[in-house]
Image (tube, rainbow, N blue to C red; front, side, top):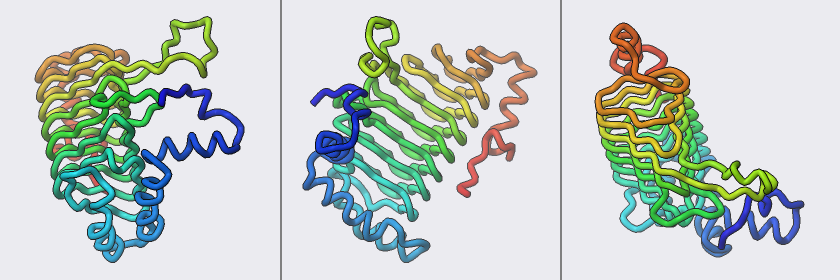
Length: 264
């Protein structure tokens, strides 16, 4: 069912409740099935809560999922469209919100505190969701969003704190329409293997980031990044060798805050 943003901005009532339920699960029955264990177990702190969720959450997710390690306060919506590989860790306050466009998280990925991985849009397209390859790190407060276009991360991709990768945009060219009625469009983002995206960087739809590329903290990437290239600035551009040295110093093995991977 295709809806517009306006449908989610109406006054509260029966129609708004129905829209809310559709945004959370495939059906009202599925909503209860997915949310009840989270209501009962999602708040339990520490190792007892982790153990309970490890045992009980696996049936909520798509076929082939492993049993995740989930901290208290993590949230999952449209869990039937979320596949979690083995040994996935989801930190406190993180939210994975899927839709007809699925979320597929590879083995040994880490989704840190407050991160938001979202493929929910009202006109989501199956096959244009979010895929994380093995051993990806999604940093504190980072946002990965695609329900149109598709967002793919390769192996060993590191996403810094508060970075944003979003495929979608509103069709603002339709100036004849109110903002709430403009169509939501999407262009794909493809990130290769061994890529480092620094803190606060933004990657927009239609961009490919090549293997072993580095996106400096705070950069806004609007065009393709070649394999092995270091880019920074607004809009992002290739950095000179002297600038590269500063960018590489922010990688996680150098211990600087732009590359922070500390789970706390």
